[in-house]
Picture 1 (cartoon, rainbow, N blue to C red):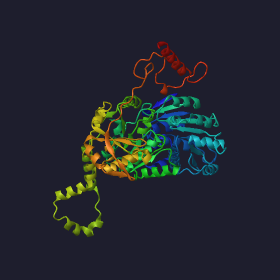
Picture 2 (picture 1 turned 90 degrees about the vertical axis):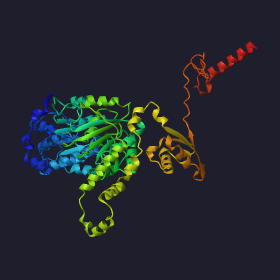
Picture 3 (picture 1 turned 60 degrees about the horizontal axis):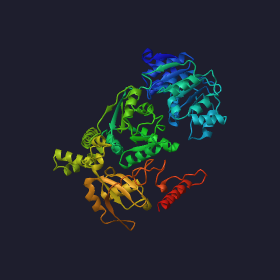
Length: 599
């Protein structure tokens, strides 16, 4: 494999890369001025050589243009036959690549790029292909399906691009890729682009490629230098509270929050929406139409916080994302590179924030080795710090707001209304009205850094008190609905209630100790559906000690071989004759005989 370093192929502009005038004109329309490092390396090589190529560069560094420009220039527009196939892991990325190639080819007559992906009409995609598609951009699952139906023929393609190869393998597409490419000619050129180079990607490169060129931007798996990496150490029960504080201390936040599961993604998005944030969820359980609506709202900044799973977030191409927040770290450490690559794109800077417990802290060191960058541990913002930031942000927004001349006719009345107020009084009244929500919420906020330091030491629980309430699942409650009822009755925010545990006929919940009298008074004369509800202070029942092997039911050592004296909880055993409980009967019979002999 021939390896080329980035600095050897630095070019001043796109004209020097060897691109034709039609593509250069489209580039000018898009406002691109200078090629990125991966573009400066890959484009001349792909134009000059008919060779396989491996391109390693971080997300957001312009890999689509790096293979898209050469591919378009090498395609024969006069032929309607499929000449190029691009495989990508998700439908979002598939659509993104298709849209970008269409823009690049706007001055190239006769070029047709078709997107093939699941969740859309297969008959519509079939009609588009039959009209002639020189380039097909596809997800592996739908591509394999259409091949099996005989709709797509790639037996004569000249070029195959595997984009985000590491992600396709992480998502389990290796067998699909193998099944797809076995129908392609050995003479084709294969171009593989990836953000990381794990063993699985090396394996696919060796299987489908011959003596490829390799271009690498930075170090393999390294994160872009435009992203700062920070982490916050928490008590696990403060995870959502910490997320809210990170959002509040960054008033202009435009972020993607990553969760591990679809269920957690939906739950966090719903909680943020309930708390007044412009948030939306993106995960695999949404329909294609729902996903499109969410992404369109996010691109238009109608949604400021997008909560997503790793799979669903592939293909998010929004250049002004300010923060990536890892609500939970991914199971596969390498995925962190893809997540953090959602920010710091197109030359802009960004911040990647990680929320971790002490048990998860070791993963930070592992990620540092992979991305070749250091994390900075930051303190969770205090309520006072957040209030100050929000107040100054409000002041700035008011100062910079344009004056609406439509109020001019009403100005005399306004001036007369505020004539008795001094400038200082007017400012204080204005900010008091606008700022009260944050101040009310954070004025008695707990120190979450202290909670994190005490996590696992049992100290935090000492500051809380636990209550019993005679409401349970038979009354139609689960933990969230009961928490809502308690919050309404006690006039507390959701974060002041913890450890809500619902049983069939009753439930438990925790509050701070200083809320004791408030809780008891609130439920002193309270009824639910005609039934008297009472609340009392309680404690968790101590866990029963597990009886290990060789321990008797009464805490004494048992001399019975390998058994427990607690017959009622022991698994049934078969005797040598095949009957059940034979051993038990034998033991009881022996005991009776011993007593008879003593008598």
